[in-house]
Length: 133
Image (cartoon, rainbow, N blue to C red; front, top):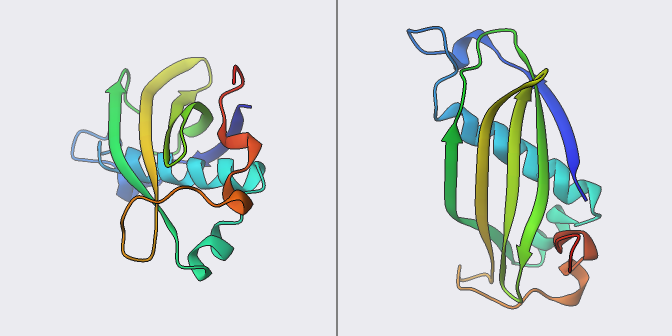
């Protein structure tokens, strides 16, 4: 399942070259991953209340083209790997027909101590699994 969301670049997210600062793409990707979780019925607030968390363990980003102020960006997200404790979400950021960013984000489910934990059944939703699984 591929989810999509969009946002508009704000002026304060740009650097002195007029491009979105590379660190801001992490915020865009995080926003889109949360939208993915909502789309697959993963109850993030309930998970937090239960004492669990989803931590980002690794982010790989390839920057293809810059975004600038007022650009409307479309972010696509989909799972490409899922295990008992962790997984990988692929993401792309587009401006119309231009691919700006490709990313892979590795996440891990953790307990209240921040230690890796097997995903309990109530949060092991089918939408976290790749389409080919």
